[in-house]
Image 1 (cartoon, rainbow, N blue to C red):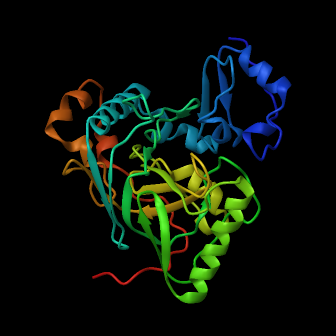
Image 2: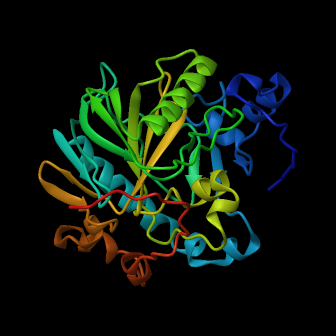
Amino acid sequence: MQAESVIAPVTNTAADVPDDLRDKIAGTDHTVFFARMADQLRFLGVEGSRSMVSCYTLTPDVLADLFTSTDHRLLLAVHDRLVEHIEASAHYRITCPDGSDLHGEVSFTEGTEALTDFMVRPFPVMIFPPVDSSRMSGRLPIVYPLTSSSTNIYEDSVLTPHSPVVAIVDNGVIVRFEGDADEVLRIEAHFAVVGRYVNGNPLAVNSWHTGINPLSYFEGDADADVERWSNAVFGSPRFTHFHACGSEPGDIAISLFDATISFDGVDLWRDGRLVFLEAPQNRDLLDRFPDPGAVIAMRREIGMPHHVGLARG
């Protein structure tokens, strides 16, 4: 193997990736990203590229952990079977302890019958391709910090709610925010600013997905750098996030935690746990690999940022 290291320039959008770097990527067998540039390219790719991977090992300790040393083929097999199940489904429902209750139809890009996969593959396996939200409606609480989706980098991307606000969604569009009047105005202003920046519908809810790597974890203070935290633990089954504001894939990430998510009435996640792994019909998948127990056991310690909470009843 002949390896070359390139210090990636800071890019705010995929359009900022220099032509000479695009040419270098296109002329290389495999490109491994340790920069957020990978997130900007994940749906767009680079013309002529062969293989691109985004590496989520933030430190040497993480590289040595079960999170990255678990058999990669096992997690790929879990991903592929889960995607097959989702693509064969017609409806889904998402609920969580903070009051989310969303339901939608599984739909695909016109002319296809599959989820739109990433052009840059994550390592380790973290998540499945996002599910379209254009036919999703219901209540989406905002009780954790809003972040960017990492597609575009913009100033003041993190907005921490001062009090709970609920986004009421109708067929993929936020029709209103409910909550304290001042906080609603603050949230609306944030969406409006980002919408203008990306020149898209500020109230669109484009898509969503949930983590599928039970070994995801985070040690430290999430509030010290919420963007870094979210880019580290979005692979946890506890973490569900929605891409909103602007055109696909959306530029504001709305997060909720410990969701129960069903497809055609069958729970695939329950209270933030990937129970899909525990289904008897998937035992054959796990039994192909030595010692899959750590994956089934799952970690709960993913750090958690500021949370304003909602009345639960």
